[in-house]
Image 1 (cartoon, rainbow, N blue to C red):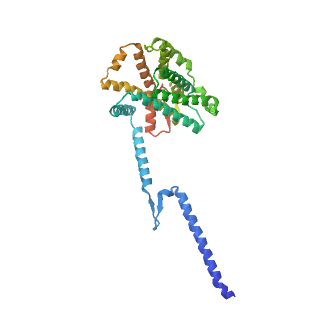
Image 2: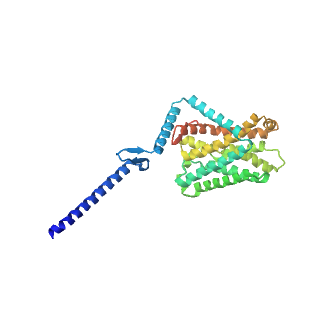
Image 3: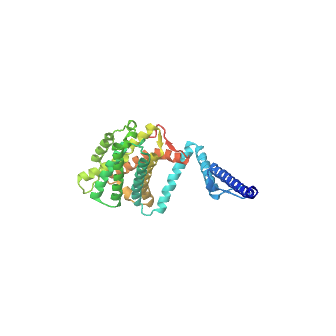
Length: 331
């Protein structure tokens, strides 16, 4: 019996040895795949060689080119960087002139960009549960001028502008509520948000009494419309003052303020392109009273208020920075 069972014992021993060897091969293969970190981009070949897929090579090439461009921008002087930003603005302006036939639609685009900026800000608050770096006072001023503009728009015209204003106002009111009455209030840096709202509203109301539309609407509506225009021009001041004191602006808040700057650029582009088109409306409006001059002045003031920040935002993005660093004199 012993002689008869010997072949069976040998066969079982051979099978056990094969199973053990198979397990060790699978284990070593899994360990090598795990250590590589990117199994999907590395394929084993029969000769022990490794083939890198074209996707990972192209991605590495793009990153290398991007890093090279960022390093080149960092080495430029301040004057060269300024010239590049100005050139970019001129290029965008000329592109708008060539692509957009009805330049009045730039106002609609500006309001749409503002709404998208509020959407990015709301996404940040929901995602991070943190509102540090965001000015509640700027949000209050934004809600005030949007509420006034929505009322005046509904009373005087009522179109796509009214719908966009309603959506933007709803989003802004939600942000104000969340920063005051939800868990977000614990991350609100109130000590940096120091510009009083009354310092902004008071001068705007006085200016509205002096310069307001000369239409046939009720005086209250004309006064409110003028107040809305002036408050909108300076509503971002508390936010910029807060960022100036913090010196560093995280990316989501910076994206929101940059969206406001883009909206102002589009609005001002409307007036600039009118002059290129040879239309006489701008010259006629300036010569017809104080109100058109104040409207244009408000546009220019708001654009220049945001211009400094947008400049540093563009440079920071081009250099690959994760935050935007501001000098003390940005506002």
